[in-house]
Image 1 (cartoon, rainbow, N blue to C red):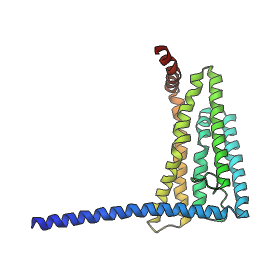
Image 2 (tube, rainbow, N blue to C red; image 1 turned 45 degrees about the vertical axis):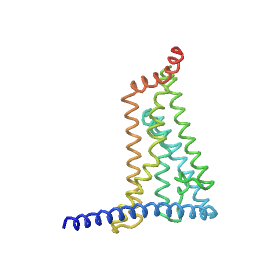
Image 3 (tube, one colour; image 1 turned 180 degrees about the horizontal axis):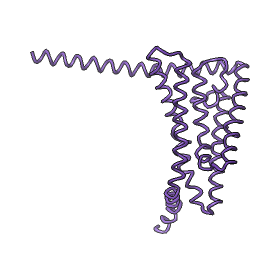
Image 4 (cartoon, helix red, strand yellow; image 1 turned 120 degrees about the horizontal axis):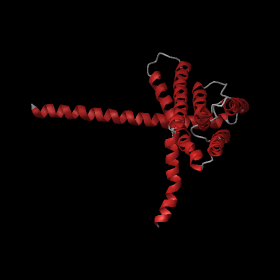
Length: 245
């Protein structure tokens, strides 16, 4: 009797392990297929003159609004802590817009190549490079301004420690994965249209992006002295090591 129960328990356990393995393989295959379809679609769209016009219009709108308009407004109104958090996050904003536009799959794909996760076309590579360039230009300007204002190298450089790490380098891919997860979860309910699902998913990504920008501005504002000390330690460490040697 005990042997029968053990055998049944092993059979159930083996079945569960097999199902888990199949689910994992299906998710991996789905991801691979999605990437393959995305590449094929991008290559075909790249030859479409309408797509090129949409790309130019979308890039101009993003440049005028997000790269020039909003930073100028923040600078003019002396919101420097928000500006310091905003500039390195141009890539996050572009990431959300690109994800949303690509998921809608309409003829008005103005931002499909703005900041693609896989930059395989010339449009995507150029756009991604320009956005990264302006993000870093914004960081260098703010560091230079803070250095001049405080007349201190480590105090000026300290804001870059949090800006580059917390926003520019880390969150972009995680936000995309989070939006993919939300879309997949809503799609499994079979109750909403693709437009509704994509809109809700991108709104969640936008909320996270805004939360990251706000939290970074709070950290820079409230913990500036701690960042200054940390930057001073980093700058003075090589000098201290050389004295020991």
